[in-house]
Length: 239
Image (cartoon, rainbow, N blue to C red):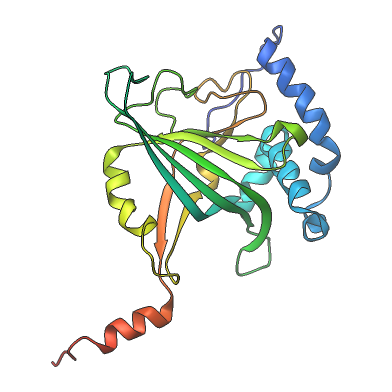
């Protein structure tokens, strides 16, 4: 059976500067990364974050069957329009959406009917709103974003750097700005869109140690009690 994602080449070559920097960072993550899945519940948020990054880089084939899903619950947002000399290639105004998030990791364990969720700390999703990625954003063709981390204690907090089309922003803005406290919005990254940024994985780009993201989902939720109250106000259908 053909693999579900591109495979790295087996040809030996001199590692690039990016690859050498990546390996140095991963050495710092290795003590947490090599801990067993059973120990995740005992780890701190930062240790779980290190575990995830190391395993996505060094243990991708083994972690894929657990279908790791990252979910960022938006806690606040800032939308910025820059009036002045634009950095965009077409000269359009630069629009940025910065979302403060609480990140969680969901894993599917053999023998368990439901996913088990682990907190992996706070962070940000910093997204450019445009019809194509700006030149300064380090992404490959078809890539939407990359996951980076806080390098003061790498990784400690997750940062999603990427871009979304204006149509996506227009679709989601009403949910992000909804004042009802029972409503929330999550940014969801499924397992099959996450790839390590390393030599021979040229379809994703980003800084050393980053995880390339090929797609993002935005999910809007409302509290069940709110939905019940809405239905009570609707005329009952007959037939």
